[in-house]
Length: 219
Length: 218
Image (cartoon, rainbow over the protein chains, first blue to last red):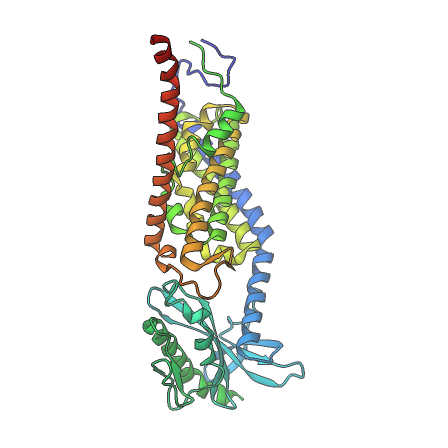
């Protein structure tokens, strides 16, 4: 038998005691935990900064012209200041809506995160709403798992996105077949993605019903 | 009985080709099918798996005399899971877009049988140098196979490679290729080509071996 190579040659085996087994796993767990805590601490600020930046970019996109955002939450019957995205300030409630302002500080509109059931999974949207005109001025799909090539057009189709440049919310947001949009409250559906289009419209209408009156009383 | 000497070069190369984890061993099918709908996703999954595999093999091999046999699998899982979580956090911090696309499949690297398989079959029985060579080879082979799948599926199913349009606006994408069934179709096609290639090489090798005998007989 050669022991010169790196192959372990099994010697006479003795069963290790259970104390040793437990100790091995405890040591492995503790070391692993320490490594994970270090990595988590190192990456957390970067992750939060990324999320905050992604949110800012989305807000500025759905409320055209805006360059500043201010987080608010709805409590009881009024808007209260909420935690800045990307921070975990204790005490402040989590943000439910973002006021979007331009450089001069003029309120242009609100960006409202919302979600609803899509064809396969929850669709998460950020909706830009302009209380003055009672209309939706932009929509961004934050997250969706719609069918690639069909339903995922809700995030990619430029023609579909054009529906939301000025979409009236009164009397309600409705879906029509592509090319049949005649009124400002109608959305042209995506051919082959009716269910996904309908899901988006449902979310938009729900946002309008919930927030239009709230934001009107707030401003 | 003398143990067969293993060379680092040999261990490095076998994973890439002769014992490729996806194309020959047909292991790790879950990530191979689920996240290879585009080339960048496939590449990111491959690189993350590579990192976990090399890190785990290094640790398992260096600790192989310390870890008691009855708890070795549990210990390997702790080591693998630690590397997977590190990979998950790092991807989330530096490539958030790809992290979102891969979703739960990054955490699922823990149960990728290629990784645990290499620990049990190789790293726990060999020295650090060989174990790392084996892991680098297997990891690179896995990445190569995933990239092959991802690139072909993206080209056929979306008409793009790394998001760059290849065929112009008149290309009608073969959408099924980026859907889950496309993963099976493309994997089948690639295994077919690979198998045919190997069969031909084997036949040729056999013919070459038989030829001198026949000549001698004649």
